[in-house]
Structures are given as structure tokens and as C-alpha cells.
Amino acid sequence: MTIQLTADDVLSALSVCCGEALEDPAEAVALLRRSQPALTATLYSAWATSGVTLDPGLAYDLELATSRVSYFRRVAAELAEHATGLTPIKGLEVADRYPAGLGRSMNDLDYVARTEADLWQAARLLIDTGWELHTATFTCHEQRLHVMVSLRRPHESSFVLPYGVEIATWWSLGDLAGVPPLITMPQPWRIPTVKNTLMLLFERFEQPFRARDLVDASLLIGSATEAERSTLTQAMTALGLWPEYAELAALVEGTSLPTLPLPPRRHRLVTRARRATRGAAMLRRPLTGTARHLQRRLIRGAAARIEQRSWAAAADRIAVGPALRAGVLAFGLPLDGAPPGTAPTAILHERGRLAWADTPVGRFLLTVGDDVDADIVAELSNMAGPATAGVRP
Image (cartoon, rainbow, N blue to C red; front, top):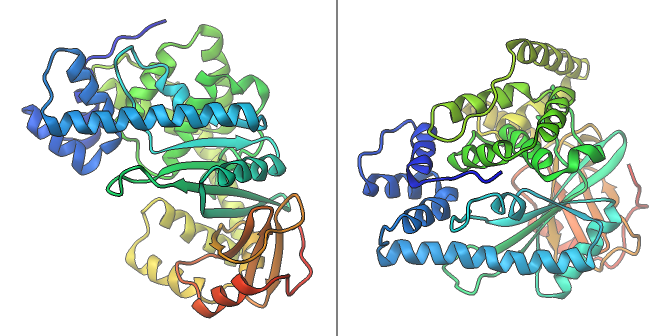
């Protein structure tokens, strides 16, 4: 099923998400640049296909977004051929749902690896073709270490953000409270319509819905078959994502985009009750529960100033290893000069409050805060072998 999308539809999504009426194109461009840059390619291409002549600045921005997607298609084709243990998320699969002539801005490619070994194999492939390690995120779930690695490659222009690829061993970390992580996704849910809608909903735990999310959801669900919608309903019920879906559907309803089916109110009530029960269970471990709560609010940008100060003070005193095993996220800084690990998966090392991970592509210093000690970075970067016996949590 092909869904048509006009410039007015795109503008309505921008207006609803920003809460501002748009009087003319100049206001729309200003608002886009200020708060919704992910909608750039869609709005500009919608104007262009309707016969509007773009000025040189807008035409350049559109060409930049279009060429970026073309580059990502080449990277994705290479990974599909040589890194078969990866499953793509959103990105190009959603872009392919857009009507002919309309573009979708993309900053990076996102993948879920079948196994951790598949993740490192794909990362090595990218590094060998000119990509660089940027960061990593480590977490423990059910006593197993999981990782997401982020790689970057400079754009041809030094004035443009680099290309990015992120590969994880999880689908979603939930909300670090009442919504549990999704490590393995059932095969029936992996069809593009279902998989990508679920990932869009999970992203609500990181940031508010954006205008592009409304367009994506309308195109994904609007083009779904009845069987796909039934599978999506089952998945949202199992994962407890009805509150996020209800919020998204209400936003879409305020636009001129094709509407989404509204969920029964009882689904949202049951889901919230279950989340409250799971969230309360965290209080059985008050220190860990508090740490995860503060980290969750920081990630969502909802932390009050006193919470930010509390987290900054606590992060300097927390032993990273125990915090990681308790479910707190640890962020990995790649260390230049350290040799890669010899094991096919990441090995965690600890010394006092310090922790680092040796991986097949290099060593990462782990931290739960924003600051790292330059002396520790220098020491671990030059240390040929581990100072401790490594473990898999």
C-alpha cells in the first residue's frame, strides 16, 4: 500500500511536535533548523516535488542529506554481504517506505548483532575499511555482559558531522526501571513494519517524539497488512509499550497524516500498573535502584539540578564493576595504543573502583560518570596485558 505525503502533511507534523503555528515557509525553516533537523530532507524534498524552487542554501542541505543516505546504502550493502550476523534497525528500511521523491534524513546506521562475536566481527570489518571507534556502552543483564559499539568516519567536508554506525547486542534497554530490556526479539516480530515501529516506541524512553517519528509511524503502520498490525499489537502488549503508542497516536491524530488506530484505554492502565510493580522491585536494592533512577533521568534529560549534582558526586565514588553488574550503564572510552583482546568477546577487568574491557578491537576504559583520570588513561593505553584476571560477568 502506497501512502502519499505532501509538504502540508510534513508541516503539520512539525507544527504539532513544536506546538507552534507556522505562518510561512521562513518560519518552518527556522523551526526546523532550531529543533527538528531530522525532518530536513523530508520537508525540503516535499517542497521540491510539489514544484517549489528551493534557494541555494536549502538545495545544498537537501543534497547533503540525499548523498548521505546514498553513502549509507553502500555501507549497508557491504555489511549485508560480509557481516551476515547483523539485523538493521529503522534507517534505510523506513526510508524505503517514503513516497518516491521524498527523502529521510539519517545520521547513522543502527544494527543488532546476533551474537557478541558477530558485533566485533562487523566492527573489525568497518575499522579495516577506514572507520574509527568512537564510544561503547556496556551493561549487564541476567549476569551477562552486553555491549553497544559506536563507530565514526569523517565526512568529506570538515563542516559536516561524521558518518556513524552503531551495533548492539540488545534491541532495547527499556527504561532502566519498569520496562525491562529486550535482548532477543522473537522472529515473528522481526518483519520491518513491526520491528521498526517497536524501536521507534522504545526510543521514547530516550527523548520526546519528534516530527520525523510521526511521519515514520504513519507510513509504517499505514502501509502494514492486517497480519502485521495483529503481530504489532501482540508485541506491544507483551513489551508493555501501549502508553508510548497512545502518546504517538494522539500526536499523529493532530496532524493531517494518516491516523493510527487508537489503543483501548485498558491496555494503558494495565501496562502502567505492571511498570509500577517492576519499578517498586528496584527499591529492594536501594543503592542500585537510586543509581539506576538517577541515570535514567539524566539520559532522558529530566534530571533536576540537585539530581545532576547528586549523580556527579556519586559517579566519582562508585566502583564501576559492581555498578555495571547491578544494571547501571557504563560508558566505554576507547584507548589508543592498547592491544586488542585475544578472546572473541569482551573481557572485563577490575582494579579497585576502576574497570576496563579488553575486546577483539581494542580496550575501553569504563566509567559511569563524565570524568576520566588522564593518568589512568595513559597507564591503561600503554599497558600491554591485563593487570587482573579478566572475567565475564
